[in-house]
Image (cartoon, rainbow, N blue to C red; front, side, top):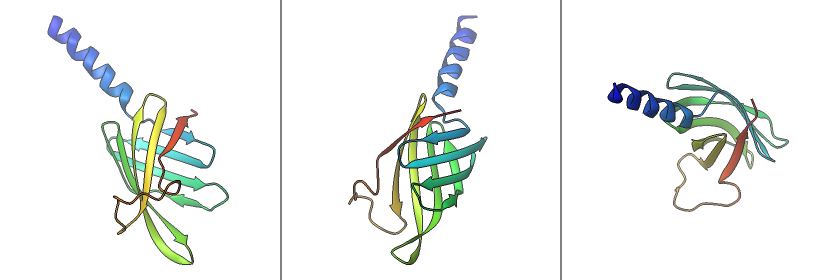
Length: 118
């Protein structure tokens, strides 16, 4: 009996840490996520820039990973995004695909702290 109660308590805590579908926002980014199992779809809007469709979206526990296509300095690029959810906050980082991740370009790469709105 105790093992069953402990299992449900641990499962509830694990589920609470997972990112959830809906709208996440900070002062510059709006992220709309639809999560189904390990799949993540949706869109990202960065300030006045166009809205970009999420591609290759994956949810793994409280971590999310996805890409978006964009135009940066007149060139087509792919942004790689990674983030971790904790409660109603999602912290994201982004990089131009193929660029080294050990050289962050703040504030361009983040971190971005987004709050869950719904």
